[in-house]
Length: 129
Image (cartoon, rainbow, N blue to C red; front, side, top):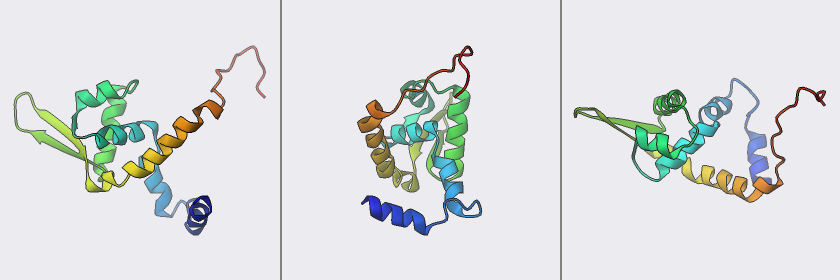
């Protein structure tokens, strides 16, 4: 499977900025995007439910990412005409196609987290390496 994946990647121009692949990756390759897609894979959610589930995301960052995902067609936003307004977010059929690849990435992260070196904060008394 790894050789097949490498052959596929070699056949596309992922490093060519005129190619669509880097532009698509820009939409989906952020920490918050991945977590939003994963949360919405569990079903339709309101903004407050997403904010509670995705720990550490600021309100500004959450709304920016939801708008970006809606604009590129991965997330559907439905405003219900009630007072106060109720807004629901869900994955579009295109967004659903991201769930399996992201699940593989998350599985890899869980399986290898202990092998990754922890990020160390730089101490100003130590010279950079």
